[in-house]
Length: 173
Image 1 (cartoon, rainbow, N blue to C red):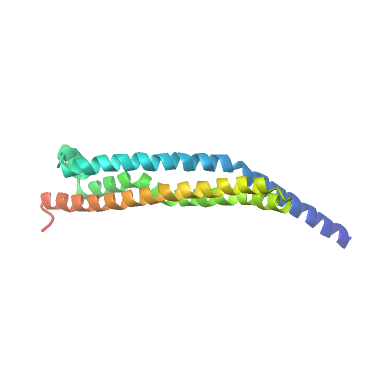
Image 2: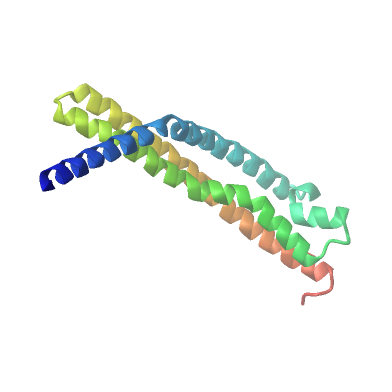
């Protein structure tokens, strides 16, 4: 009786491991696609940031987004401008945080097949799996680094614009 229970536990454990492995493998392509999209987005954001920086250097009013919004809608309160700043930073901040996580997932998923291939002596399969794993994490980290930098500079820009808006409203020194 005890032997049957131990055998059932082993079978359930093996089934669970196989099921979890299969499910995790299903996520590789979507995660790689997400990393590719976010990598491209990071360069799009970098281009938009460079354009905005150049426009700010030329003192183009539209490049000062919060002040421009205040000029177009004078009834906006400071709290509404702060909410607008948070909204404008939200997506790029999410990209900054999520992309490295996806990179880690994209690194870990191919490691299972790589270790199995190593155990089977199939070095080409090991190499292929590791190539995918490390390429994905590198792209994810590059995307995250770019968006982190952009988000922080924009956060500073918005803080300065909010101070200026507060002064214009008569609430600052």
